[in-house]
Image (cartoon, chains in turn green, yellow):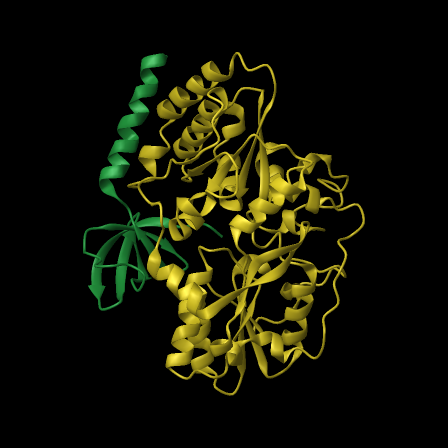
Length: 72
Length: 358
């Protein structure tokens, strides 16, 4: 029930929009996001965008993973 | 796929698991880590994470499977409501096969009466399409789902869709964690905290419980990283709430979603299957929304039901035993013929064990 997938916003029309993941378009409700933009990635759960994915934090998390290589 | 593939790369998983192995080499005892959320349980099973961990790390599944902790009497209530010719039940898919104590489930009823929906908004559309019927949505889920249901009810109120109802079984994670740690019997060393519930409620919601936990994402690298962060806390004798899922989770969460929940629902003492009644751990409809409350449509008080004899779902949900230790597992209780909810739900521990660990 916690299942949410990252989709890319490709269209916005008021509080509704279209998100794309893996080549498939999904309708998304954007009511719970402040200032969503086309091109941004959001988490989609039960038809609603629940959060924007912070691209900077995602990059930092992946960068931090590289630290593990030092110890191998 | 972006934000999925990068966190699943085999070489990365090998690096992190090697690091965990190195860190735990000198810890003489078993480390018990509980993943609270059913979606974590499935992710762990599907990616074979247990085989990447050293033997002294034990992963236990917790009560974060909303279908698993829905009391059997809720299913009986839903079946009663479905029985009326004026009612249509709309529900998320994994509630369909959950049996009550008499072995009855919604799945045995006709598809005209029971509609599976992906979003609660679809059930509102069904209500608009069938003004002559009452459409009752089964509100099951934690804080990730409750705001979405709240918004649906706000829309129903605004647009005067008066044949729409909700039978709420929504529950809250932090009170369940408090009950788990005070109940004892499982001695959990650390918690993998639910990533998407935390998107809504924020990391701050766990700080007064007194647990060691890491809010964790759902891709394999996220979960391994979360376990590694817990191991570091244990080695350093810290009891902190840390955030591994920083690309999605903040300290205070999603304010708009919390506001929707606060407007539509009030907290109530609620029974969790397997855990008993936990104070202020569930959501009931607030006064303004009481006309949408489907519990008022029930004929009378629905009696509490006992779980089937020998079913150990309750202990599985508290991390006291593993699915394999239940006498019914794999014999009388299999996915095709489930006895308890942990085998029915796609996120249940028993279902995950049966699919991935046997």
